[in-house]
Length: 344
Ligand code: PMP
Image 1 (cartoon, rainbow, N blue to C red):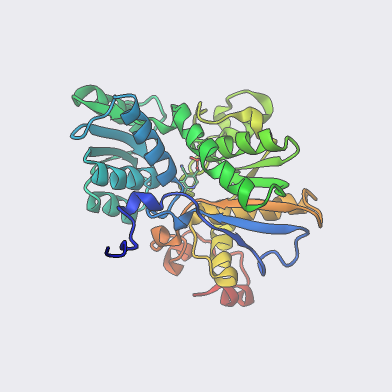
Image 2 (cartoon, protein in one colour):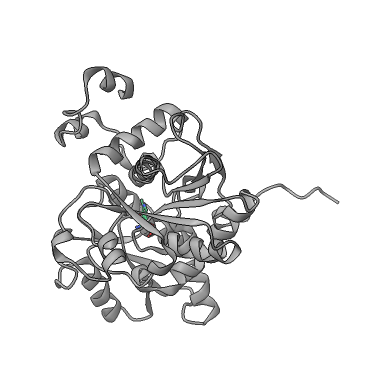
């Protein structure tokens, strides 16, 4: 009998089981051990592969989706890419309503993956008929045989991370994790992973990362929705101008807000010091780690896992472009010596 060829049946079999990678140089001045859960190792280069596969397979199990149907979603890009990838393999049409804040690279990539893309204005309120939420809703109503993933308000988003990300982190750290640091957009990653981890050990500290210009931190602390917290910012995929039901605020111990500028520099620093070419929110997540460290959150015995949601290649025309950094004024406050150190 011939030997079995050693190959995956399709790209979807590579989703999940991403590596945990120790951070060494960038943590030199911090107390504790720091490990990155590097979600760029998913085949779609982000953590969103997990929810796309999980939600679509759940819809198939329930008989809601059959091949030839259409999947609709709002997305800053990553979820769209993952849904498009899963749709190709499983034989679905894919329609995406995306924010005009998304990089051109991301939009081109979605179209390359066969998705029909509608670009919607970023700086309108969520209830405006032009917002990507309402565009997606309308498309869902108008398209026969369509399913709206609705990741911000879908419990399955949390479940995907409860079933995969959380158990992987617990197993990889052999139960020795003391802190989880994760960005909150839909809240699916932090809520699902945290729920699983707190069930294993309720003492694990769950630290969320939010953006200046977003309502999440204030809502977590006061349970009040404060419109004054909302203003435009540059980081894509982190923070929100509404309260997603896919965020379980009760499992999160504390939020930290980070700036566009410091997050961009920290993402560049991760590439330079650790050889980890990860995205803007990975920079934001590690920037939050630095700020939590300043507040004495960690000690020598801490085992901190920080989730890096996606790959740096998606931000070539943004944070990894010196021209873009200059245009934002992000080099203004950095002295020449420092600039040379982080220059590419
Ligand atoms: N980083 C990036 C780049 C993202 O696209 C997202 C998702 N919006 C997040 C972080 C936040 O993940 P979650 O939606 O699971 O909270």
